[in-house]
Length: 311
Image (cartoon, rainbow, N blue to C red; front, side):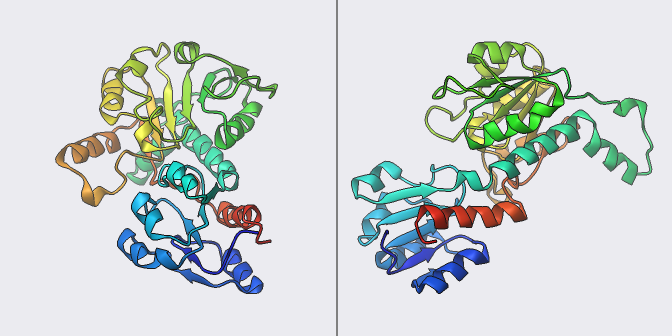
């Protein structure tokens, strides 16, 4: 078992996590609103660290945490942790992407249906006492070609949910081949871009995927697809996205993530981009809540407890 002399928890966890630590007699500090500077003053005493996306665990913090033996990421995506450097210090790094994969997949599907069937748009019209039917005649998923980029926990779960819609599901994953799920077909990226009516991103953010959806990406689209992003905002170049919407290279976008998700820190340019996107009837944006469900909150903690061998 990993050492648990002192655990620092820097993100909100389900009560089951705290209850289990107490039942096992472990010592912990629960500081869910902790920031970088506060953690600098605490990390020296930690054997274990539980984090989310609110703090970047860089070389400086790792060096200060001389007793650190493990870092547990609550959720998916390790881009906020310098995993390579941590490993040189023999620090074990784990995450729990299995915990919210279904929540993300359901949210992506909900956003897609909301856009395709004009649910969000027409609901707003009804609030304004407008009862518009013909102009809100929507599209069905059935019969469409759906391209999924990234076939890990969330991408595969999204495909599973879509499998009942009588759609053609194409999958591109640079690091995964020989996929055996009968309801999907593997495709190279050019084929996926040429043939998809809907494209959904389910990739981590790293050097390879940053601005994966750039001007070149959009120029190679043939079907004016709907774009879905519930992964990371930096996967899409916002300038290129706005250009694609303006030039009708895509028919719409549903986004749960943005490059900058803190409106209070927007530059002038970022505010202009935000205002443009939020005023488009064919764009729906939610505030990075795809992985947030009551069920995923529990599962994220439960899976970390299992991976840390606390249970």
